[in-house]
Image (spheres, helix red, strand yellow):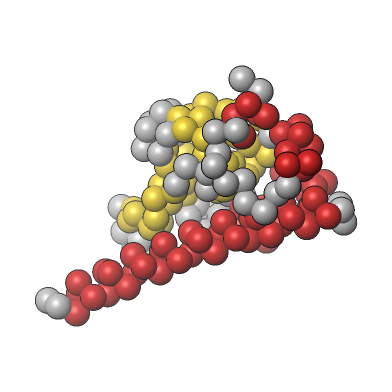
Length: 155
């Protein structure tokens, strides 16, 4: 299947317009992932940004002074991952781990930078799409934190 075919599986590609999709598809490469695979590693720069097409992944964070990791957030079908590291060009603040086999579309760093530096209306819509996705993920993380805080206060 082509990236264009795979993008049809995503109900909401954000704020992109139909006319943007062929160009966006040209920049995306289908990748398969397997259960347990680390797509983004905490402390390393993300190799790409990914949109999840099939399967399940989750964000995990190392606990200070501990060997274990804690679940931060489940990633939904159609969510972009690896964006923060690409946007700020810093190491990833968390890992993204596959909890099932699946499929994603990946945009490598060079293509991401090319698209981002292009001042076209499409690049602006793509940037807003990424930010809207990150905002939705932040809302879910905040809801988790509030739930955890409430549970701790009831002890």
